[in-house]
Amino acid sequence: YIGIGSAQYSETDNNPWSFKERKEMIERSLKALSLKPSVFNVIPIEDIHDNKKWPAHVMNLVPDFDILFIGNEGIAKQLFQKYTDVQIINVKHEVDINATKIRELIKANGDWKELVPEEVVKIITF
Image 1: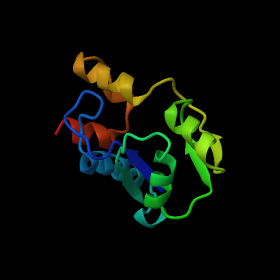
Image 2: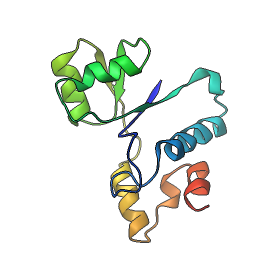
Image 3: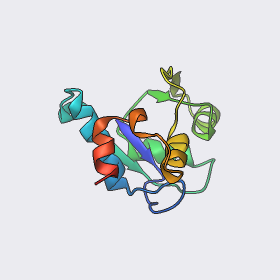
């Protein structure tokens, strides 16, 4: 399962693309790596703006899981550690890049295309 947070937002600085567009970026990128759609499921996770209830909210949206793979030391990790017993595994970053940096480069007309999969470039530049 791949959860897309802040799924209800689009056309904002932090979430310029809709859930549907973000989902398409992920699905096309994984399919380009020869992953079949049957091995992953992209799920929208809307913000509820209640930190204490958020982990339970996520667990209600995502079918049973007992491991959470996380890419940073942010609020999601802190909340799951505090309010659940879900095992958390930090994902090792191969490249020092994140979505915020990519959005900033896009806004500044910087070099961002080599930092994302080709399928994502196709969607963003369409």
